[in-house]
Image 1 (tube, rainbow, N blue to C red):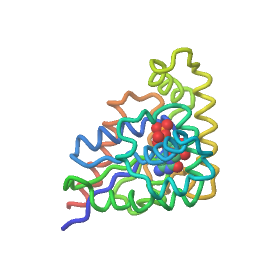
Image 2: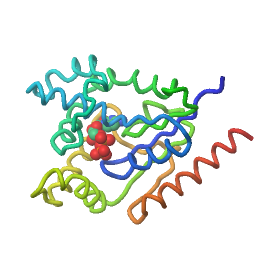
Image 3: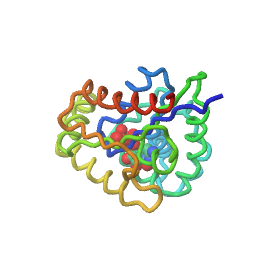
Image 4: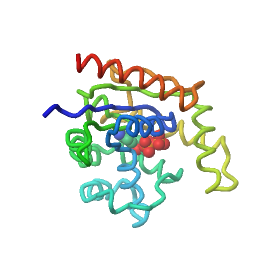
Length: 217
Ligand code: CDP
């Protein structure tokens, strides 16, 4: 059996990679894994238990399952910040690695491919991915996008605070020693600052279709 197609999308917070990854997965009929939800999920469980994210994170990551956080609101600012703290721990990353690799190798539901988005998919989790993207946008545009996503849940939220959160998280994600956020040399850079979702999706599709045709031909 042919090995599954793997599409890797990495990039800074709120760069649009999640939306793009879902559109790609649905278009090609591939399975989708938001790897940020694993780190957010571990952070959510720790905060719920009142644990200091540094102390119990590795143990929480080892016993973590997505079922445990089903229905929980893990997209908050607080959980995003705590996720990037726990994500800097090598033991946490190690505990979550097999699940991600297994998802890519054996996409659920018999899908012929998998789409994973995160920070280290093209560099560490799936260095042999079929197609890799590094999705970026200016900090101001990313802050506005995230502000619009969060403001209904959080009246009084300020765009400037969202921007500060994103900058702090990006610095931590790019600066950590284990699997820092960085563009893989063979990743396609996609700057979505001035792109609609449709335009970003069309650009990604052109790249993917080109690679898939070459693989088949
Ligand atoms: O959606 P957003 O871009 O805000 O972030 P996310 O993808 O949900 O990831 C939340 C946090 O998890 C990030 O800031 C990273 O610290 C961490 N993460 C990671 O370290 N490696 C990944 N593959 C995915 C997320």
